[in-house]
Length: 328
Image (cartoon, rainbow, N blue to C red):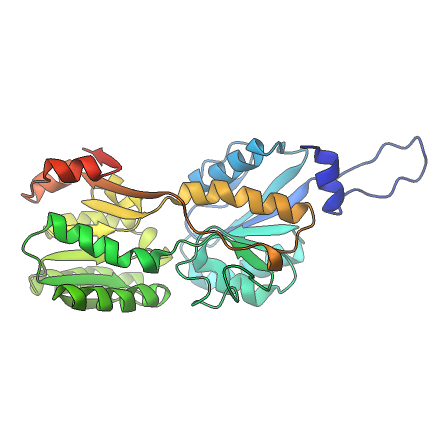
């Protein structure tokens, strides 16, 4: 790839005043708006955040050099969702050339700008949530990758049912962001003859009481949807769930690493790496409105054997072989 061509298309080469003058270029500014990792963890050539690191690797694979061709301009609410509108406005005011962000922060960005290109690294349902007009023709300033986590809800329940038997009552931890997942879970549970216990959360302070309700109701298992509200509390949730001896299915590997039983969902690191190709095309001049939203290509089912043993569950060998990863 010729970086001169890429940067010129992005409009970040100044006019040359004389034939002998050397062009002075500025690196493209790539904004990142996050809600979990700190801003400091997303800075530099080797960011500590695994997601920023995956984006960095994707750009390097395309021939970009940090500091010469691009720099990150990260902002993070660090778990405080009410800060997102101000942080989004801050990125827009810099300004940045493109913004990369996950699904939970997209509403704040959507309100902050209709012109700066936004690359999403994962949305449960980009069309249903109103971020794009269609997957094939986004039609606005947002494009990128979908998580299709609504579509995987049935699969999560199916796998949970293969490990936990008998299954009668499933507690479901969800919030406003995962409303579509909750609705899909209701459909999938009816098909299997299972009952659901709704544990809707509006504030992190409600999580402990909700899990206590699940234990008091003698739920057979627990399903936890992806949400910025929950994901920042992953270690605490996994610990509380383990103490209540609730077999649980999560959407992200971080819960399993924290002691959770299992997780199934799109590979978020792969999505962040693939987001680099959208950044590349946008910097070359492609409008996000014409870049089709891509669906995830990698899904991971991770099982924690140590957690299963603590719950008194035996994971049959055929299930172990089907899992993408078995830890513990």
